[in-house]
Length: 163
Image: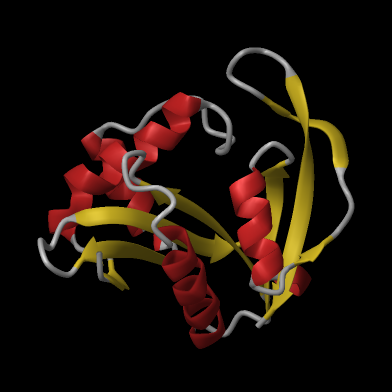
């Protein structure tokens, strides 16, 4: 599969909401507990500094996405944060890597100096491996920082990457 990452369009809404909600429903990565409706999704994706979508160039199908926004305000407003989602049937095909690469480029293009992840769950070994490969720096861990869907808590590992 050949992937192109581009800017989100209104026509991507249904696919973007579906993919986002897959991750929310799994309950092991995003802090959100409520799934998006199409109306909520329209507002949510539009309010980000940037929403990127990964498309299969052969079919044009949306196969993943990311959101990018400031991690904080004022004196820390130069730090951005991102969240990534790949369609659950297509994971392991380097779509996430394409999304992360594009987010690093876009964060810099938008004038951010640092990309920070606040809550990478310790059991998310594939994400941890990818972030290590791409030069992110781990900042320690926060014990029991993430409530898993099944009710137990797992450590989270903040990361950053200078842009």
